[in-house]
Length: 558
Image (tube, rainbow, N blue to C red):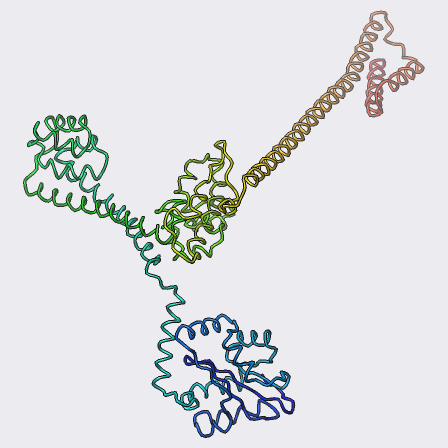
């Protein structure tokens, strides 16, 4: 990018170092681009570089904390007070005659917006900044290369630690590892328990039906060993394990009449050893769950109070961190964990899933089937609020936190209660009960409006059905009348044909066969025939009349 400078306009370059801010001035030229070849030639030589650049001012940081604050402000594109003071003090008052070169476009935009100085990045400015960075300890009096490297190292550690929000008490990585291990232990303990049941079932198969819990079964397998050695003396130990005297008596009776096979002592030793390992894993799982509960109460107390420690930890684990979960919108939290079903539905154009990991919450489990989608959407909204409170609140709040009790007041739709919609507003102590009643009234009004629309649609549907039924009845009546009208000319036709046949018979009897019929009568017959039927029927009757005349003439000739 080429900038043409008017006469008298100076280029100043701002350089940010771990030791402080430095402001340099370049000698005046007619065009900035003319400096580029000279800077490229002299950037490696300090003597030549000093002929182009001179130090205007240097403002060292007062402490490591001040250096960290300034570097954070620069990274976010914010003009710090120390930098503002340096520029206002050392730059010329006539802002139109000054051009400030900066290495970052964001801080340049902040300087131009707040102070009014024109800023430039890239091109010759980048080469000048490269030369200043190379010779910085030689340009500042009293600054050695070793002290400059120490300042950079210390500020780099502080900046990185602040960026990752390092806090021992709120490390959510421990939660992610704990919930992953807990899920893996559940699978492994279930698999190992099935193996103990199958292995020990060869010797004592009746015990499987009596005891259904895996942990209790492993403890009994370790205690009983050989079923033939069970006696009344062992009844007390059995009751201590199963916590039920009836079950203990049933185990004792089943051992006496068991159909299991005999087993060798070495096999019993292996079964006992394996059962002991499964029992130790189960006890470790209980301790791990307590550890997870304590970590969740430290890191995310509001989220754990809302949906439980296990479901909250699964959400954090799936999102990657509590910060990522807090950044998610409620619609993403709602289907978190159901990504495969979502993309399959989008691919097949089917119904998208209504819930993911939050389905394991008791709120959705207690809701009616038709309300599970609504309560999952509502619960996802509150989970988003809780995660943001836990992540971005300045201090770690122990249970119960200021918002967990309010978030916990969610009511299940369809159970005669209205959900507390405005949880965040109700959590403030100055909120009155009038606002809550207004919210409930608003919800009732919306529900009544929906019911009214539903009744209106139902009424329209019934009217449409009634109109269709009336139209169908009219069509059927018209069809019947049309059929009757078609049947009448057919009946008249048959009657006339019958009359003509009767007349022929009478003529034959009276000896009038030789007489020809008078044409007038024929004409009258034609007229009589043509008057009654419709126009289409006239042609057919004329043809039939002509055919009958021809037949009569043939009979006369005979």
